[in-house]
Image (cartoon, rainbow over all chains, first blue to last red):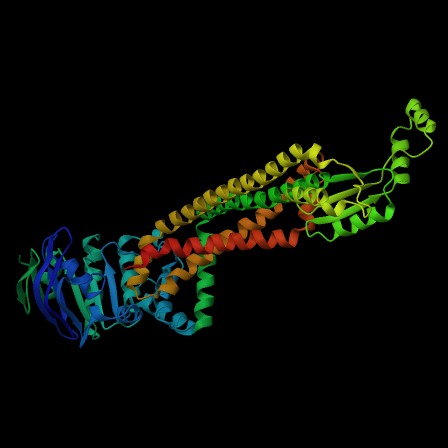
Length: 226
Length: 308
């Protein structure tokens, strides 16, 4: 499904973020990427999102090299991916409903679909009561659940969660991981980057460890170990 | 789909305008300054143009003929003057009219009137009063009068004198001042317009800078350029529209207050009646300027953040 073919990313100041990474991710997999800050996890995800271009190598989604896509094709491609960020990145001037509706509008969905799907997806993350609140009125855990709902609403093929529990307390961390697991059980590929040992150890899924831009381990059912 | 998107973009634009109340208010106020300057450009050029044309009307050439000149010869000259492209109006003042005007001018001066009564004949010659289309053209007209055309068929010149040569220095100076005032006025106001447009542009740029993280999130959820840009352009247009309407309203009491001053100070132009009289054009100019400045500033400012 996703294939990194000997990918390197060297920034103009010659710092090497990712070095010769070859990696395959199958459909419906739950993959955790671990590593210290600066190990290259986020750069890898940015290249998958077509936010950054690799300096060498290619990134394939199914059989398409995503860095040959045109602007409109990139928009279409990004709609197949749901993103969850550490800092939530909700739109502060929009209500929770509008935050999620925006993603659907961007994908060209009808008003009827939006009216039915947004409440449904908020129910999935147990936030129906906050539908007309603004992000600043929510706790960190609630914001992250909204972000997951937003990532989910277009029924993406992949969910990418970049340190989603980084700003959360243990209880909210547990909730977020459970939601991600549920999403994966329903057939969506999940790519998770994290520092949280507890999260990795509880998942018992594939773990890829990175260090200095290289993959140093790739275990089918791994534990947190760098 | 197009209409659905357009509807969503406009709705989002209105929401954004309303929810960022303070930023919107500040932007509208800044934009009003720009539109004020544009308004002053319009009023300024109206005042300048009216003053200039009034001044121009005051410049003319008087050609006085000798008292024995035949009226037909003078009218022939008048006719040929009227055929010149530079000439806008030629008025003939006959000897009798000139005498009448002279008597009226000196109605209170008995000694002059008595002296005039002593003379057996009317001592005044007929005159032609010539107005050119442009002050710079008096030179050409004076040259024409100095040429052979003005000699009567009998071969004797019938011109007594042309007052152009006496007024030449004053006329030349006025012509230069008029031209310079026009150029300078235009350059200064244009500079002001440019500066205030830049300030407006920068204000809008700042409002978009605040939203740059949101823009990148929109990009990452797969929103198209038009869909991200649209609401910002709508907000820019609302800024422009609101600022234009407020400016036009404020011009009402302002021009009313300034009306009497301008009428007395500048030659005859009441700025309030000028404003009311030309309201549709001024409304159109101000509103279109506001919308264009707001809309184009938004498009230019957001481009930078759309590269994700």
